[in-house]
Image 1 (cartoon, rainbow over the protein chains, first blue to last red):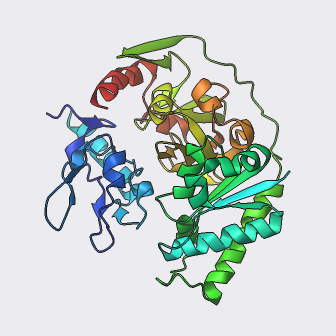
Image 2: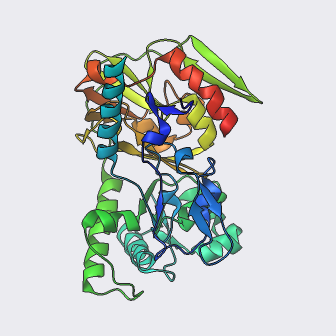
Length: 96
Length: 282
């Protein structure tokens, strides 16, 4: 049982996290400097930043994308995510 | 009112080049002074008088928001601001990678300028509040480190994204929690949704901006936007810091599905229980 839930649903069941478009990313690290939840991690080599801890990302938060000059960060579709959360809530409600 | 325009200097990418053009045209249209971002950064004293006298219009090119950050750095709250990359996206246009503006870009610039100038002339013409919203008096206080976070005990519901809603009849006010305003630090700007906008629950109700971040206001409830807090938008964004549950409210909506939606929200005690762990993790 996960301790980390969002709206009553286990966080790892909710696919909400940034996706980096490496065609656009210039590794300026603004997003990583902004995010207090350690979603990103820096790496040596060509790909200098990865989404290492997607489940640390606050569901519905898109603040890192708004720091991104080259517009390289995207998030999942919000209405679809809301629907998924509601479905999961109903499914769990039905089993108790 | 006299204006000063601080725009992206526009030599890094196409959105910036467009922002620069928008800035120049806004200055022409308003008779305002142009503030050079590089010079402001290097020698802020050059613009001390201008910035003390004029209302500042900030035009950012991309999400790096250099112009906004420069304004924040010299402690100036913009009267109005736009983010050109967001407006380009919203327009459905795609910019060429070039820093030279073609006829399409010039047309887009013209329309952005027209919107900015129109918004400067608009005055708050919204219906008088239908409900008397008294301030909360009874709070839970969560203490963490040297911080104290207040949460109204009753009458407020919270989203897990730290926005609150207070419903009265079929109206509700929305704002951000004391915890969130302290995390964001000084609120410099509230970019409100348009009146009449229909928002879904957990959709977006504008953005607040601090020197630290831009934060999307996640709507705790669905409904139509019937009012925005003009005091916060026009003059005093710091009200959000000073009185987040009262005078610092952001948006008023006409509720559409309160009974169902309130079940997805936290009451005062439940929200209180989330604040301590959040602060600890932060």
